[in-house]
Image (cartoon, rainbow, N blue to C red; front, side, top):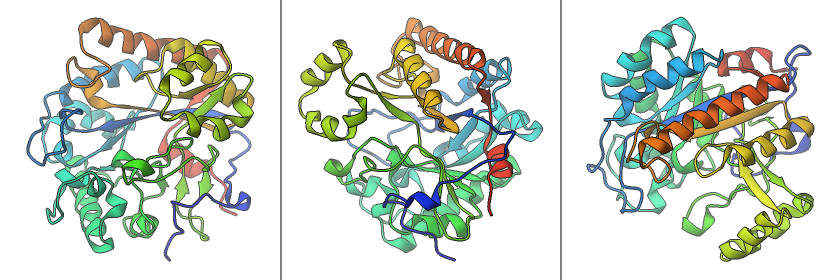
Length: 334
């Protein structure tokens, strides 16, 4: 049965609930992808996968805290032996999970022109988005010997019929909705009005949407969704509001967000009763020189310190880690 249009915010009745013992949890998702120049135009050929072995260190780090990372893998990584070598044993043993992340410009079949609009997979013709997604899903299953259960559209680029394709692919959880963010200026989706709470994408309750967690902090946070869009072209004003402690948008990521800011965001999400806190970052940040956030060794050390601080704080607040598999088992379908 076709899913609903994930570009549209859900009705309140679609919100998901979880088993009594589930409580509040957090999950770490990793956009596991090739390295490329973020400041240059997109290119099918100008990329590498030299950072993939760094997943092994991050996996071992997470295991020390009892965290099961969810690696959302795109084509260049899935089509290489490096990823199974780095995390394959952990995936097999259930200490890690793999999901799907579609970067259409590097994912066969190669039909469309490479440009900004087409970088959002949901903008492609339905049959092409479908073909790319099926090819990637199957490649990941061959690489790891297990069927992926989760999906994140690269650049958060869902389309009006993406849910339909995900259901065909046996995907149980989509985590593409980046609530509080608007990408429509570049041809992408607008998720400003989407909730942080997990919700069902289809009437049969087969596809769960797990939005990435972004909260507003400060006295003005209750009207953050009204104020913040007007400040998009005025970063200096956003900075003034943040420094004054009036309004700050805090996505749960180590990329561009300090540990102090993230801790505030975590506390808001917990206090608001959010059942699942969704953390995310890009795998090339696990090595130096491949993203704007990790340019030198000190930055990489800071990234691990960030996770250490967050994991410690979450444990102190009684928030346990979870996984896609546990979420699928714990969510109520009735």
